[in-house]
Every structure is written in C-alpha cells, then in structure tokens.
Length: 98
Image: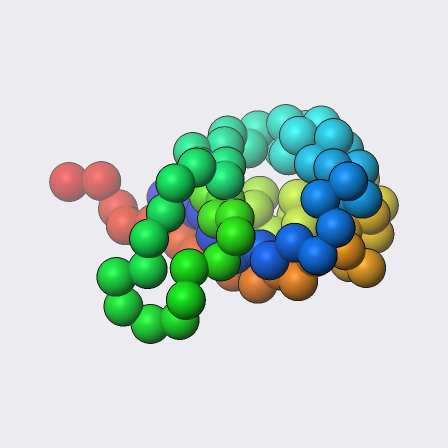
C-alpha cells in the first residue's frame, strides 16, 4: 500500500527556508517519492488554523517513506529547515486498492 508524508509548515524566514526546499527533492526522489501537493492554496475547514505551507508526498509503501525520512540525505536537508521553520510531519499508510 502507498504511504504519504503529510507536512504542515510555518516559515519564519523564507530565504533561509529555501535552502531546505532546494535540497529536499533529491532526497525524496532517491526513495521514489512523488510530490502530490507542495505549498499550494489551502484553507482549514476544521481544526487548527491553516499553516503557511502543506506538503503531501507519496511513496510506494510505509517502510520506504520511513526510510526516506530517516536517511542521511533527508536529515542533512532537514538541518537547513529546523532553525527557520516549524514543521509537523506525519507518515500515514494509505488504504488498500479495491
């Protein structure tokens, strides 16, 4: 079953945050990840206020999604985000196809 990273990000400094967004696609691609949403328009219908940026990334399976997050390449990219943005990232397994 497919798996997804769902990230909500509030950015404190867009210029510094761009260092993260420049590095992340290569780390994601190395694990076959595919961006489904990357910061487009969004509106909170329920729950907390809409974050500045929502990102959804699809992976072939849960194990690959977790391996990508834990990889040295992604952790290196993440180090460019940590001081300049607050992120909530969850990994969720999709539903089985009918």
